[in-house]
Amino acid sequence: MSSERIESFIDTPSSIYENDSPIWQPPQSHPTVSEEPYGSLVPFAEPSWYSRPNPYYNASHHQLRGSVRAWTDEYLIPNAFKWEEAGEVDPKAYRAAAEAGILVPLAFGNRIPSEWVDKQDRRGIIGNIEPREWNGFHEMVINDEINRVGGFGPAMGLFVGLQLGVPPIYNFGSEELKARVLPGILRGDKRICLATSEPDAGSDVKNIGTTAVLSPDGKHYIVNGTKQWINNGAYSDWFTTSVRTSGKPGDINGISMLLIPRCEGVTTTKLLMGGQWSSGICLLTFKDVKVPVENLIGKEGQAFKYIMFNFNRERLWGACMCIRMARVCIEDSMAWAAQRRVFEKTLLQQPVIRTKFANMARVVECQQAWIESLIFQIEHMTLEEANIKLAAPIALLKANASMVLERVARDAVQIFGGRGYMRGGPAERVERVWRDVKGASIPGGSEEVMLDFGIRHSVKVAQGQGARL
Image (cartoon, rainbow, N blue to C red; front, side):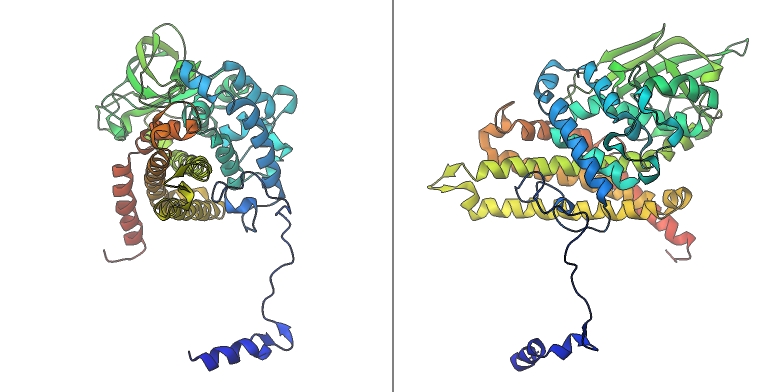
C-alpha cells in the first residue's frame, strides 16, 4: 500500500465509520479488571487476566483468586522450605485446608455437587463460591494459586492424593461406600491416594499385576502385590487401588478397583526421590490383605475405564501446575537479574539475558492460552464428547507443559548462576522447581507416550469423521 493511500485511510473518518457510528469501540472498562495491579509486577509473573480483560473469567474467579492466594501465603509459602527439608508436610495444614474450604473443590474438580458441601462440617468452598457458579476456570485458579509455592512437593504433598483418589469413588462407587468414606476425607480427618503404578506397569496401565482373589465365603478380596511411586501414599488412610481380579497382565478386562484401608498387611515405605521430597511418595505393599467386597468401586473388570476417565482432568491440572511453576521461575530470576550487576550492567540490561526472558515468556503465554482454550471447550461439551475429542490435545498439552517448564527452569537456574544450584536463598523456589521437573514429565503419562498418543488418537478421531488417513 502506498504512503498516500495509508495517509488517506488514516485521515478519512469514513473509512472506519458506518452511518456516523464506529464499527467497533473498545469498552471503557471491564467488570472483572481491577484498577489496581494485582500480585507481582514482574512481567509475565502472573496470568494476563489478573490485570487485563479476558472473556473466560468473571468476578467470582477474582474473588476465589484472592482467597486462595491469602491461604497460600499463610500456610504454604512460609513452610515450603522446612517441609521439603524435613521430607514431609505438616498434617495440621491439611486440616487447615479443609477448614478454609480447599479440599472439596480439589476433590471434585470442575463441577462441585451441592450435596457434598457443608460449611458446618468443614466441607465448604473457599471464597464462598456457590456450587452452581463453579466451573473449570475456578478449578484452574485454585490449582494455579496454590502452586505459587514453587516446586511440586509441598502442594502435592497435601492435595494430589485427594485429587486422584476421590473421583473414582464419587463417579463409580456405591452410595453406601461414598456415604461411609467421603465425609471424613472431605473434612480433613482422613487422607486418600490413588494406587495404580507398579514396578512393571507405569504408563502401560494394562500390565497391572497386583491380584485380588475372592475369598471362599465371597465376603472379601485377598490382595497381594506391590505398587510403586504412589504419591501421598505415606500419609494415606485409604488407597484407591487398581487390582487384577482375572486374566493375566496385559488383559484390560481383568482389572478392577478396590478401596483398601490402611490395615494389617498394608505396608508403605517412603522412597528417596530426586525431587518432591515432601509429597510422601512411597512403595506400597499388600500381603494377604482382606478387603470387604463392599469396597469394590463400580464393577469387576471395569477399572481400566475408571482410570482413563480421570486422565484428562489429571493431565489438565498438571499442565496448570507446570505453567505456574514456570511463572515462578520467570518472576524470581527476573527480579534477580534486575539487581545483579555483571560487567558494569545489570543482567537485565544484557541483550543475551533479555533474549532468554523473551523465549521464556513466549512459551509460557502460548501454553496459558492453550490451557484456557481447552478448558473453554470442555465447558461447552458433554463429558462423553470431551473424552473423545479432547483426549489427544490434552495429552499433547500435558507433554508440552513439562517441556516448557523444563526449558524455563533451566534458563532461570542459569540466570541465577551458582545461586540457582543452592537450596535456600533468593533462588529457593527456582532450585526446587528445577529439582522437581521430572516429576512433571513422567507421571500421568510420560512425554513420549503422550506425544505418540496425541497424534495416534487424533488420526483415529479424524478417520471416524471420514478423513482418509
